[in-house]
Length: 308
Ligand SMILES: [Zn+2]
Ligand SMILES: [Zn+2]
Image (cartoon, rainbow, N blue to C red; front, top):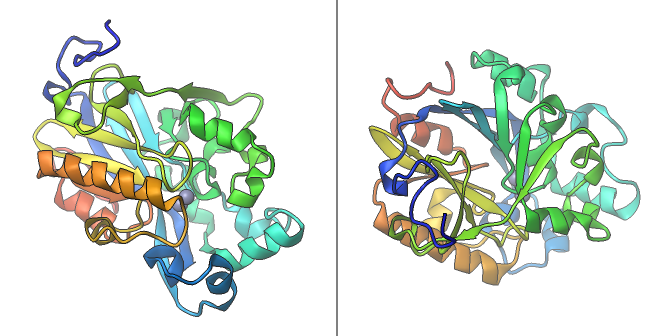
């Protein structure tokens, strides 16, 4: 296969594939409460809103479930309930003190990844792969429940975890780098496929063009999104924490954290992709509207609702 390929491994152009995705649904591992400034952005310094911000916004912690003909694929794995039950979950000292002010979680016994999958009619044993948009704690929390599965992350996100003091960025290596975890660190390959322009690099997850990983850095180094192509239903773009809500992306309103220059560049690429694919449905990890948007974009013959 040439380096600049426009074809999937099955020989089909990307835009002609998609029949292998049987359904897409969403679950949430509890809810979080974030500062309003964290979600909507502010000119105030982060330490100001972390300690003095008074308004909180309730957000889901979404995990997307894709039934592919080769097995079940997850996009992100949610927040570990240990944050509620383990007094040593947060690091000691100033870092833990700050995180306790940044995050509030509500995660009941039925909100674990295992239970949420069961309540949706699946089992953790069914999970073949999990794509991790980035390594923040609220996206890797279910990994220990699916250690048999292939775990896919960008090599840049992995390298960021290996930097000193990554725990200060809510990246806890102890919950990620398990000796028996099957991590696959991917690099995006050059592509001139016009259907995903302006993206010039991509990674074909299943080899059939049905799930294409795209680099969308800014929230974290190496953050990625996943384009899901379905037959007979609009394509989906799972964007992780690139933005916290679709309307914020459309307004180019940046959140209170992340690399602003890279966020702006990734926003512009996603919006340009949306212009090429007007029916594209953009689904962030913490958008309260995402579950409804997915349901609306999914014919009953192709997918299950969140409350299946
Ligand atoms: Zn994040
Ligand atoms: Zn998150």
